[in-house]
Amino acid sequence: MSDYNFAYLDEATKRMLRRAILKAVAIPGYQVPFSRREMPMPYGWGTGGVQVTAACLVPEDTLKVIDQGADDTTNAVSIRKFFARVAGIATTEATAEATIIQTRHRIPETPLTEGQILVFQVPIPEPLRFLEPRETETRTMHALEDYGLIQVRLYEDTARHGEIARAYAYPVRVEGRYIMDPSPIPKFDNPKLHNAPALQLFGAGRECRIYALPPFTRVESLDFEDYPFTASKAAGQTCAICGAEDSYLDEVIIDDAGGRMFVCSDTDYCATRCAAQAEDAA
Amino acid sequence: MHLTAAFQTPPLDSARAFRQVLDSMARPGRIVTLDRVAAPAPCSPAAAAAVLTLVDGTSPLHLAGAHAGASIQDWLRFHLSADLVERHMAAFALGTWEALGPLSHYPQGGAEYPDRSATLIVECAELRAERARLAGPGIETEAWLSLPDVAALQENAARFPRGLDLIFTCGAQLAALPRSTQIGGR
Image 1 (cartoon, rainbow over the protein chains, first blue to last red):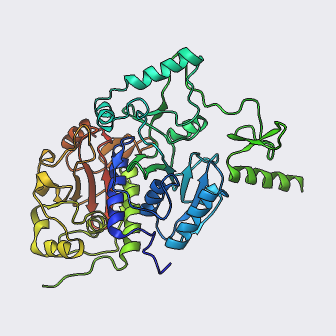
Image 2 (image 1 turned 30 degrees about the vertical axis):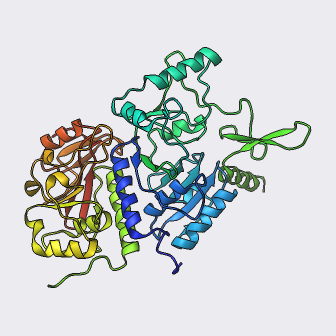
Image 3 (image 1 turned 135 degrees about the horizontal axis):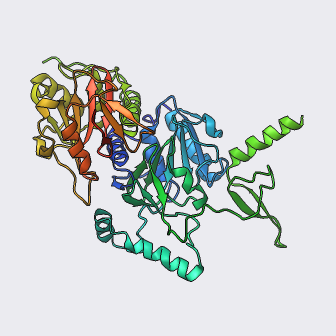
């Protein structure tokens, strides 16, 4: 720990990140540019989230890191070990014990509380990017609230597929103003963004953007009156390990004959339920 | 020239101070305590902690009124290499409400880059959860804060997404008012 400055980054970098985070909180849903630093991991491995987490960490924090809901995957384990080493902070796999949770593409099933900060790793922060590749144009579109294009895109989905065919990174409108990409979380998680008691911060390292949802912020998933938003998951399935009906499920291929099972994507939620069931049985 | 110290352990003290400031900005009206550093008079401990945590040579600072005294200038230049500028250039400003002057004199941010606006650190004689009713992002139902000038701050909020963000300090106490907060009077 003594070999590194607290939380790895130098103080000037943390000041820059902290200024960007405060502006992001003050303008919910707006993407604040920041000057990214090279991190000891490649882009796509959560460098944006890591820089936001580093700027927010205090020595008293307990950090949880998840990758697609799981605490035990390579990305999650390596980021957790990174911060344990460079910040000397405590780590946990239990959602309720964590004060900062860095996440790749999921929101934990256990409801978050006021004292927690959720840090999202974001690959492409611009919700309009695949409709308009030019940054100068998307910036003007946000400035003018010119969001017709994305509504047309959703309409084309309904015309072609009979529904809005977006399963993840489902765009949301924040406080009736900015349209925001919630990062590639499944749309099952979108309702958890709305009126959340926890502060939610988004870091996109490669794209140099930070944005935020303060607690208790109005977050609406885009939809139409006749095609309302639905937070869907694998229909009619329950977790093969803990039997949960209410959690988001991963489909796992288990043999070469087409066999498959559905299990909770949130490993802490699943393990906690299994432990409770074992206790009840005993 | 005699210079007083800044944070004793800058990485840890500024991290803790930032979490307090972040908490106050994310929950407008919440009053937090920052008492780990003393700055030359008349700068309060809370304002000193906020400035040390956020300002450096790349974020121009305007000092207003009594806060532009030589001892504060020397202290900020030594500890932060602060770039001291006029109002229209400022990313941060420090002073009393009266000394800071009209909000319109500070950068408001543009329609395309609303983040390029100033953050004012306003030293107050008192800071209490009363008088003006606050609502909006960060506030579950309602919050209250003793604001210096409700009409001017309502006008600021009406510029959203442009506009200034404000940090109010009084002794070791600090509260924040981002531009996104609607102010209801009374």
